[in-house]
Image 1 (cartoon, rainbow, N blue to C red):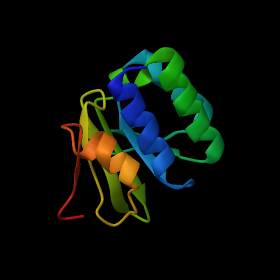
Image 2 (cartoon, rainbow, N blue to C red):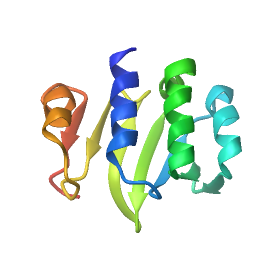
Image 3 (tube, helix red, strand yellow):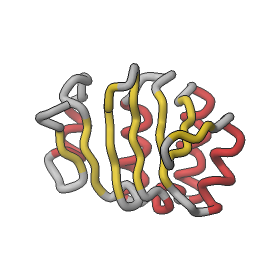
Image 4 (cartoon, helix red, strand yellow):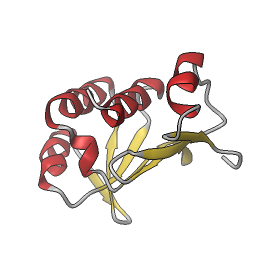
Length: 121
């Protein structure tokens, strides 16, 4: 498994269920996966709820189809508040200072160059 696959899966598993995932990607590979999740469209994003089932589908598609590489931009929000923001195939991103981040995640992703903790949100 690649570092970006592991990072994306760890992000998906870090945020609680029923958050909303906003994805920008014109690639058929990811659109094919998202169409089964009752997606909506909002301001250039495809929006899906991260139910337990949808999260599991995204994790499995990341493992088997490397869908993370097709994501141009992703935002994970709850109650309109930004929790995570990732770019360019999930090669880097920022996570909210408002969520409880396990030490293992900090050591694995934040102390490297893939993830930062936002000072603003």
